[in-house]
Length: 517
Ligand SMILES: Cc1cc2nc3c(=O)[nH]c(=O)nc-3n(C[C@H](O)[C@H](O)[C@H](O)COP(=O)(O)OP(=O)(O)OC[C@H]3O[C@@H](n4cnc5c(N)ncnc54)[C@H](O)[C@@H]3O)c2cc1C
Figure 1 (cartoon, rainbow, N blue to C red):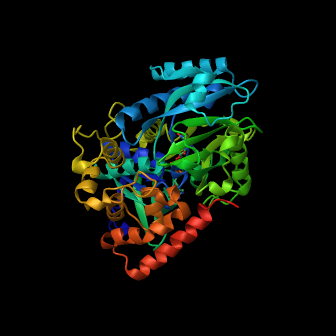
Figure 2 (cartoon, helix red, strand yellow):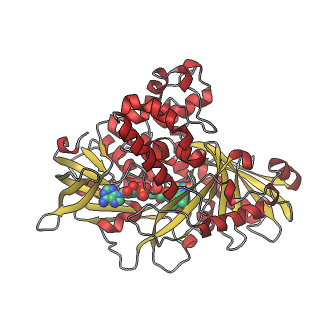
Figure 3 (cartoon, rainbow, N blue to C red):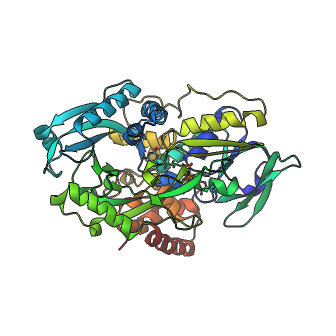
């Protein structure tokens, strides 16, 4: 939709197109509110495409005594596993137990039992040295005494955001990417009356009126509204990941690593056909107005843990194919080391402007519920929060996947695209119903997303709608001829524009996703 033709009055304006904003848009539309979302970059451009992709309670938070956060996260995980098959899937974790290093057997046993109790299901088992070594022969054996296996869940974070936005739009909501909110308008009493928005490319502006505005801009939230608590402010903490080809270390489960230098938990895990190693947790001193990037120090730090746990695999930094850096929206009193900071969220209310920040990908529904409940006094009469409705529209269970697809591929497509999965498949040329090299993404996904998901540039398509720019070496530049051939007919870019887009994409990838050093 063009900004010029947009309605001039809204019940609710949501600022920020990450998981928090997308979750709020989805629920607000379901509650019958006329709602619009504005994202100043691309949807999921911020932290919500740069996470570790776990839908999890977080054992670390339990160990820190953050019982409610863990409980809320575990309950959200259980719901998403039921409501978003193919998008949120179980993942097995292995935790090696070493003599005199890291958490011991009984500490883990206690934590995992509480974790299971919260989920209402048993998901963990202990394995002795021999059994554990069979599960993961590559791991360091010196002083290994055994280990645990437990279950959590994993997603594609950017697709989780897009599925929420797409379902909200299908139900009557509106969302604009590349449109920033530049000002919040208030009347003489200070009550919010609307917003000023600007298309970041065309510089076209619009003044819109609104009954309430929710600021869901994550790590950027204090740019629109400073914290009302003098001693509590957003502390942007950077976390980075390295991506390796799966064949470099053939592990089928996520493995918890305790960093030998500072004893922080880290993970290496299979995701979408690659291995992700992460993450770091340090103060982000780069400017918040530019895309975050990983430093060489972070890469070296992560490689130290990887080499300590998998010394015989001889993995080097030069084996990595890409890097991702993101900034956590963490609320801080400024007196703790980064990894000890709370991942809880805050809701601030200021005369019709509700700011919601902090939290996790996993708890997006809880953030949406609390933000919408804080907005209630400013909104017109509407239905209550649909606590028991599934987050996503449930699809009819078809027994036979269409067009000879395997049950696994069809489940993945339905999880990512909901009802649109069928259109992707039925319109595809049979030769495009095969995966792009070393990934699970089908070629057929590209033209449909290029046509329907508000793509402004090639990075939107290759880094967020699908992730092949991160999953294939060099950002997938060797695939660009084929990407162009498939998407050209539906995108309306002429040859000149394609040429420009391709070089801009490569330059952007080199800046933001190449492996440092
Ligand atoms: C390394 C790392 C690993 C993580 N791993 C996990 C994990 O495994 N599981 C988990 O549950 N959580 C995880 N998290 C936390 C989780 O990713 C974040 O809590 C979540 O993504 C924050 O979402 P958000 O929507 O609040 O912010 P964002 O995703 O950052 O969205 C905010 C958006 O607001 C936009 N914006 C800013 N200003 C304006 C404006 N004026 N107008 C319009 N738009 C604006 C920005 O462009 C941005 O896209 C991780 C975080 C990091 C950094």
